[in-house]
Image (cartoon, rainbow over all chains, first blue to last red; front, top):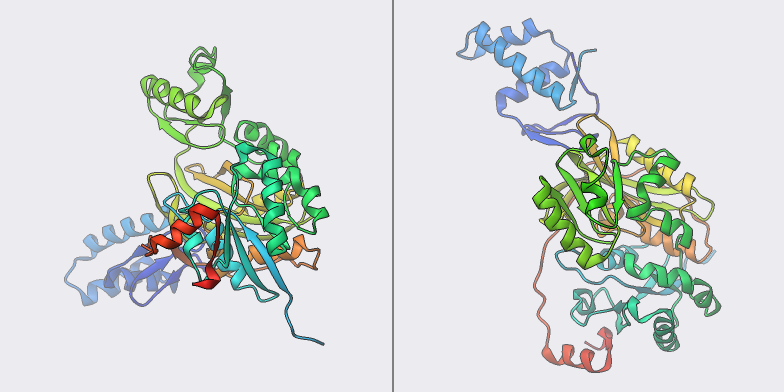
Length: 81
Length: 357
């Protein structure tokens, strides 16, 4: 999985897709996750990192991550490369 | 080498900065920011309350001009009067409805050393709404399926009616369009549009998706010199963009290039596009002039009105090769306070000198 190179992500969690002109706001955990996706970290690593620091089970967060990833794909921000 | 810039007198129409704004005011803003020349602006108004006429820092003088329905002779006579006083170098017409007259007058105005930079009448007609489907097919641009109807039965009685499905868009030949969801709405809106704009009424398959526009400029030798695509972010009930953002979709720029190269389009234009759920961009309309959001393109690095003036005057012009992506415009309405004497004098004489204020 790879975040498209031209996607702009600000520190405040504002995301702009320059190809489609769409923009989105992320909460702080969303920003953490998308940063890890940008660094091409595997799903297991992202889950472990979040479970380590937040009060959430690995299975619950893995489901949330799958939802988030499919949303990013739907909005043409993430590819399977 | 002298660094003194040339100084031009440029006449501009479309100063109606209202809820469905004309492009005149943003064209003037762009001209005032030109780096290759300085200019003074002659506003040409149809109505006395066109807001641009009261923008003293943008428009130097204003004259009322006759509506296109008065004919080209009346317009030429008025332009002769104005030109005697103002010595116009270039006119930038900004309304679809007046372009026919200005295209017809191009030679006459050229004799008076007034330059225009407009498409030919043939190019102008080819992209009319009622010709757009065939035109798109000819030049390889996708246009939603459409038919031209002189009567409602031309659609309602069609033998292949089952191949069409609601929602549909019912469009006037010049202005106005409604999305209709059933036969009842079709009949009501078809009648309204036919009464207002005449026939044919265009019936088009509705495409669901995101709206994009591309502003562009074609040179005298059929080259695309400027193109900036924009996604509409806030749309008024009249379908006008009240906010938008520049995007980096090269496919949209390629569509503008194909349009210019295939049609030989000369001058400013706007492609109105819908990117459907299937990922394809469909051409909904091709407007034959600079659009009202032109100042966004200027701010993003492509000053199309400046390019137009230089092209009209036969100066060397170069194609823009970039623009800023992610630049936004947010339109606003702003109440200007006008002395009733100023309005009164304009209404009596049809002339207005903003430099005296």
